[in-house]
Image 1 (cartoon, rainbow, N blue to C red):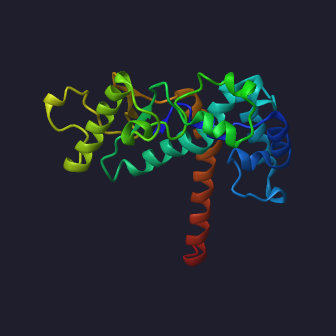
Image 2: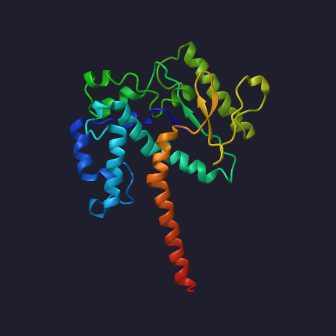
Image 3: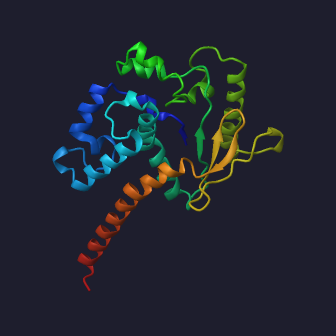
Length: 239
């Protein structure tokens, strides 16, 4: 599973993002199979630019569209890989997918912003960009400040699901838990638990964004792997 705004982990200044993108945009958004700039194909560069236009309207300033920037980073490093792994694994195991969406008063976002040299003035404009990476740990381990009553309620929901899974192999055990049934994901239903104070089952997490990644990134990679496999088989077993 993932958190709704994971990308807050990697907020950058305009100067830093612009410099990095111009040098290695396809690698930054993981649309290239290589980290070496001299190995970026024209297709890699084109897909990276399409992604930048989709999420950021082509801007190289994260603060001109912070929601778009955070979604781009979230999808690149967290949500899109999570969904692809879920799709590949679910035919073989019982898989329970979630997106954590609870916006509590505590967050690791200020820590990440300070580590990335974001000024206090700039950081203040990101107050609503949570939950970010690792914020779910606050409700599993109580690792920041003392939790308030609402946060304790969120913790109770999470720990009940997690402890059930650890003890019984499924997130739901007793009806008395008073929690919605967390249904298993498969490539046909693509269901996930929207994890907040009132958890609920939903389908097709961030459907439009995941459709973009599936068609521009994952399907071309799968076709390339299929061709490579066929070439290897033909080399060993020529017709």
